[in-house]
Length: 461
Image (cartoon, rainbow, N blue to C red; front, side):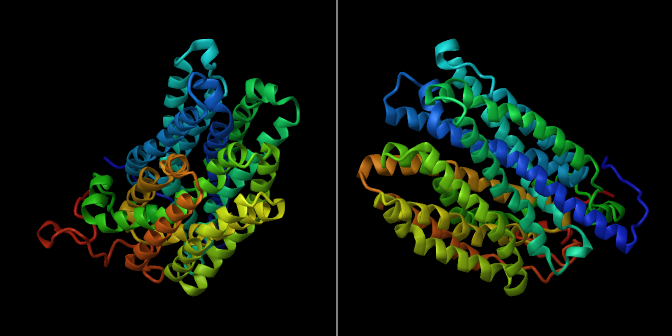
């Protein structure tokens, strides 16, 4: 039995105020969750290999550390399935509170895990379990955050900009994670950082959880979800309905992310390992470069979201995928010169180029699913890319570098996945002008014999 709420309709002023608060809540909550997620990746690149896999050679230790990083990505589709179901069944708001708690508690516990020298292999096992819980939390976060931020009439013609703000939470979380690690590293020696210092940013997450919960608990359920409740269009099995009826959109959602997510992981996480181990660069220098890039991304993310409202989601996305393809070889060429100016330029340019896809992506994907399965469908497609693209990216890059001994192999990898994004985006329909709040008028991907109800075959009555 689905939960049905009867709420008095809001006037225009109240609706606008709650819409703005919803965007703020989605952005801050997403920022906190990405802070937690990125923090693990950054520390895994520079510390975890030594602390939890010390018996391995440097190459194997790096691969093992990135393997635990990858497991967080593997768990993200699981989170999409679990929280997508509840987000489409009981509402967006309550589901997002649960994802924030799961992510935050897991992060704090990571900061308390003993090392290999203290408890042996159980340290790595504990990291793996907590990293998977992190992944489940993040996997359930994105679809709900985008729905909460966009399912308001105020954003009918500005949905690209509204949806870009939760995306804005990603560079903001990265900025906070890099800042926390950079500041912490100044309080002691490298040895101190590798034993105690790296734990402090994880423990700080407990304060961020409290802030995020306070903000999210004050947000109303979205008008679009209230509407499908009132019309009794809550589906019994939204995940099944999404996969059966909109498998094509799910597949294309996964594929368009290929040339966006993997480059981001390489530009932020793999960069630290590559820069320190292969180029002999100092960690503080790389941290500062990523910090500047993340700061610029705070402006380019909403900018490209806004541009997508003017020129269309698909067009903006295609421009971004092509730009990533063109940037694949110059990026590593600039890094490999070891010239400080060119290294800074490569890192600073990387995230804005990435944002040309990342900013319009949220609205582009969310608009591809009807409201009754929007949380489930968009989450599943979005998070499947974690397995096919983002998760394996640092391991693939490490393997290519080890096997071929040149960054040209990694550049070729970047070019191929950017091309996959470009081609896939050509096939995903731009629905930015369609009715975002209605289940009516949707053409399902399943055979006609199965489509007993074009809008929602398993609607609860």
